[in-house]
Length: 380
Image (cartoon, rainbow, N blue to C red):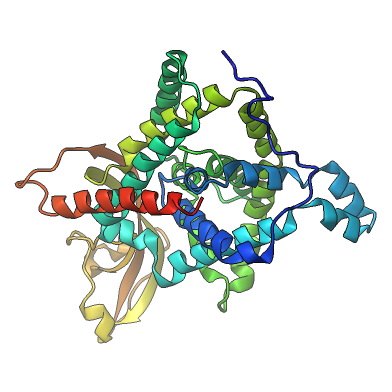
């Protein structure tokens, strides 16, 4: 039976923003955790918003950007438009999200660590998701047997999404726009990872690499590449936030039960111990002097590849003629390929002493994630 809207009122988007500058440190920190979660495929920033107790407040702030605000903006009534938007809350929260995206793409690149230290990264987020399921269960005031039906539906949808196989996709601006709509919709939906959907649509590396270009000599190139994605994200936020807020207002228990199912389904791909299968794609070929120090340490084709999302390798002279672009080395030079590795499937397994020497690292990370949830809940 659906919950009555009066029992779980949705915050009115017409209300004034009640945020104050005193909240900046806490909202920035919460935004940082949300942005950190969004970087990792399989983890949802919406999940983190639920853990931190700002989920419905976030939806309300997004909904405050409505048709009336847009009309005021186009009519150059800027003061009136800004007065209706929960601008201070959004600025403080998204400053933390932006900081996390910059930090985890430039300083501590998570897209690298999920290759080099998967047990630590995925174990931490497995614990976070496991803890968030407990928090969601606490948020449901009246528990009924009917919840199980919605939880099973959520698990089925979650399992279906996380087992989708990545497909080759174009980098046309219209498709990048579509990816922005889909990714941001998933990012604000607890349990479904926008980053994972980007991985499925083969645009995870595209987005992160262009974010990494911002602030450097390739800033404009990265900005123009990301612009369709940003526009798509804005459109997706405006549309889906209203749908989700309506569901939470009128079907609170059922919606939360489905979200719990989403989270349970996503645990399959977040489990730190996986047999992962990758494909390799050559993104660039360059001619390099053979006596350069960096070339001496590079692997060749057929050698063991380093556990990195991107690496360079030397092309043996015997197969240079097979290169599609026809690049050839000359005397004193070699060809070096830049290779991207992309995850296409993963199969979870239970670790033991014979097949997983890092099993205790993974389990310790899960425990740290659970403890982190307990600490984050205090920020609510």
